[in-house]
Length: 70
Image 1 (cartoon, rainbow, N blue to C red):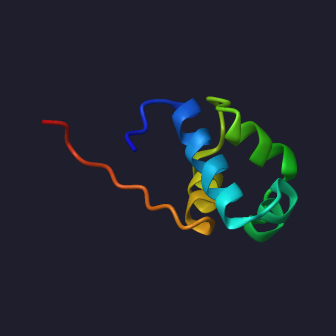
Image 2: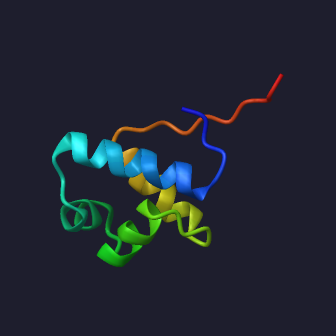
């Protein structure tokens, strides 16, 4: 899935979290972030803190790979 904006990123996080069977609260606790952060991240808030967003993605088993477009 190509991530083009914060909404795409949030959708990927939400879908993966649900496939793993975690609630937002459980995921927040595992990542040492607040439930509000997880909610805002999943809803595509564009000002989410990058370090926390990467931590959440890693916790749900998503790799973030940057590559040049061709």
